[in-house]
Image (cartoon, each protein chain N blue to C red):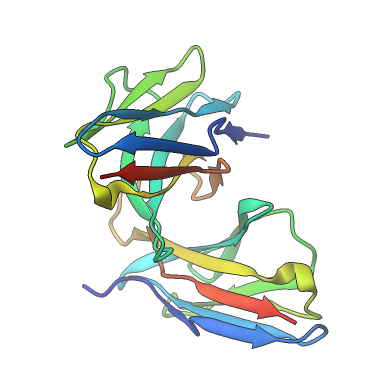
Amino acid sequence: KAGVTQTPRYLIKTRGQQVTLSCSPISGHRSVSWYQQTPGQGLQFLFEYFSETQRNKGNFPGRFSGRQFSNSRSEMNVSTLELGDSALYLCASSSPIGGSTYNEQFFGPGTRLTVL
Amino acid sequence: AQTVTQSQPEMSVQEAETVTLSCTYDTSESDYYLFWYKQPPSRQMILVIRQEAYKQQNATENRFSVNFQKAAKSFSLKISDSQLGDAAMYFCAYRRGGSEKLVFGKGTKLTVNP
């Protein structure tokens, strides 16, 4: 079974631009969560989507948004990029159909975003 | 809000020896899970071990074991017979029951010396 994939793996943008990152979960998984990892703030939860609905949201400005498609693939968008948005963006998938109360989360390799 | 604290930014251990990484957390919930994740230089986040709050028995996975002290809200990771491949960042994480959201500590960088 293929793991979680994220595209692109590396991205360079300039301030003011917008960017879209993609995450394809493990087949059958319905939940996708996004995290931002920076040296200063560590790992911070952005949001979680389950069956195309945002189920939970972290404390990030409205410039950060996401969505999930019917095949469970998810995208996150960051508009009006700032230097501080430079980070590793990780996604994690879980909740297979027929899963239990606890479902392990599997992480993708991340997208490294650099804002110049 | 739940918080997770790792007080050791860096630790080192000799190959084949034992090391313990510390973690404390704060929550008012009764249903939760605690995790240790490993992040090697490749940046791939890997689950090392999981502990359900309702279980009194400490979780073990081969050379990895935890010391879960619920009243003290402490959750340490012991790595026995350390190997060079254990070198990585280790993150302690909390997850409330029924939620997929993970709250991470700042991490401990583990160096394994040959």
